[in-house]
Amino acid sequence: MLPLDLLMFAALIIAILIGYPVSFILAGIATLFAILGHFTGQFDMSLLGALGQRVFGVMTNDVLIAIPLFVFMGVVLEKSRIAEDLLETAGRLFGTLRGGLGISVVLVGALLAASTGIVGATVVAMGLIALPTMLRNGYDARLASGIVCTSGTLGQIIPPSTLLIILSDVMSNAYQQAQFRQGKFTIETISVGQIFAAALLPGLMLVAIYIIYLLVKAWLSPASAPAMQHEGARPSAGEISGAILPPVLLIIAVLGSILGGIATPGEAAAVGAIGALLMASARFGNGKRKLVIAGAASLALLAVLISLHPVRLQRSDVGPLDWAAGALATLLVLVAAASILQALARTFRADVLKPVMNSTLSVTAMIFATILTASIFSLVFRGLGGDHRIEEFLTNMPGGPDAALLFVMALVFLLGFFLDFVEISVILLPLVAPVLILMGHDPVWLSILIAINLQTSFLTPPFGFSLFYLRGAAPPEVTTGQIYQGVIPFIALQIAGIGLIWLLPQIATTLPGLIF
Image (cartoon, rainbow, N blue to C red; front, side, top):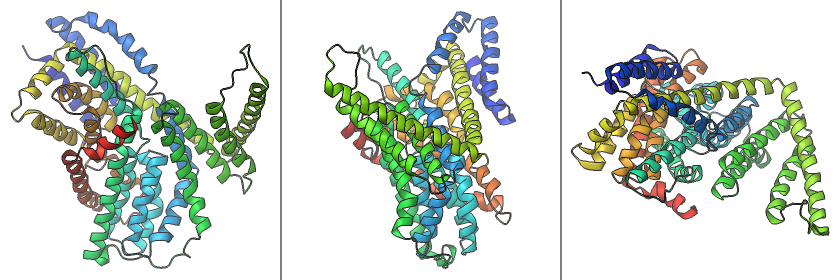
């Protein structure tokens, strides 16, 4: 009798390559093989009774609630054209150096990654603004394309990132499964904050690797990355702070609240969403920023007030100080609410709010549809014995835990040529991650290795998403072949980054160890 679990996985890959929507494929193939398994005696249909509980668990997951809010934050910053200000200012600041224009694109990519986390938005923005500028200043089209594509993918490894949120949930579940199999009764979990902290230094390490490569490339081949011709005056300190300070403050507010243990990921994402909305309001306000600044200051003061003196006026022992704190908190809430209402009105009049909501809804629906249907697929796959087959294969592999991890990393890399990071994260990782953790690999370190590997999937032809985004935004003179050739050196740099973290796990484990 043919093993249905292997046939099920093969059918999934074939259907995805044909081009059907992934969420429909996952649910359809799971249903088909559940029926086949029932009639061949390989699947117990009573297992499907757990389906409702799985769906309910996904929809009530506190970690995943942060996804739509972070998506909203990123789309607001993209639609309000804040990225353009950053690119223009950084280009004027670094462009006079040989290779400096490319370095400015990498640095802006890192800033946008930490403030938006949306690869498509970053690649398209830089493809429309930075790529023509680099070509106009004599940059090699292949190098310029590779810089834009790679810088745009930093949004997947530098927190806050949708990939890291999904990974933290998947790896936390895998870590718990591994502990259950070990017979432990006190179960530890992995938080989003730990994964964010672990990804911070590796993300900055990749930025440094890209910059070093560009400097060496400009030194060895000056014609491929010349200094920018004078296209505008050097930006003043006021222009630099005006372009860079708001995104940096937003990053500090979001990441600082998570890493400092002040807010949950969902709460921090809400802070980011409101902060992005206020930044957009300031941009569309024609210089009228008093209420925006007052609203942002009120929210900051409100956070400080509540942490220093919680307002609970329903208590029986309320004193004058409590009433004063309550009155101040009410005033701050009113000012903040007025500022948020003004931001909503301004973004609506600027015809930004509606596309922001549409983009947020479509991206969130895609992610959650894939996560929900992947849980159905994994339930049937496990019911057919697929998880035991994978565990047996990895544990019996010659070379031990390192060989098993190398095989999984190679498999993730190859699947990245054809599949999206969400699909790999929610389909493959729940099957292999518990086994790798049982074999002794640190789950946090493992998460970062896989995250950089999944980030690379955005660059690998033929279906790398960054390549498609740039193809749509690039000038006609840039060919698809040049884009593909341009990303090859950066794929090699990504692999080198994975190798560094493999050899030096402290890059990923030191910061979460200190903070948590």
